[in-house]
Length: 135
Image (tube, rainbow, N blue to C red; front, side, top):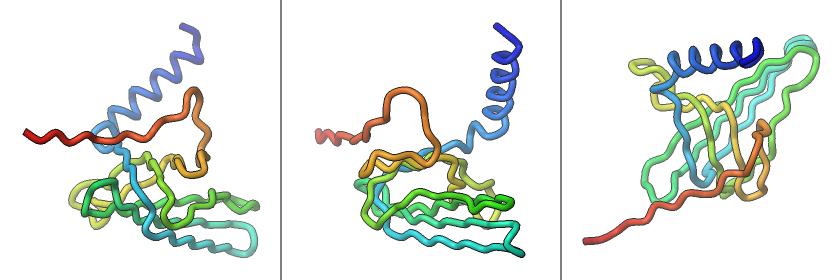
């Protein structure tokens, strides 16, 4: 194992140690998309996206937020429309805080248009359908 692999392994283990119990994935249809862009003196740009997703075969909804700050250039975001099927990967908020039920987005996979927010290597994930068996 080379030096680069050791550093990657160290960062992966420390990240999973810190956020392992909070990592989550949500799959469902988009109910609402709210995009807020702010610029401060045309130099510093803020992007805040709020998604409300209804998971498949469920009555509850999940609120997801995506925040990015960037100097000089506007941060880019993918086009998401109401009714699109998404897979959202992220981290749940800390327990006991006000945003404990929201998911901080790390990556979004739009299964309707087959596009990613952050490109992933390898095969594209497929939608998972749960089969209910009645006794």
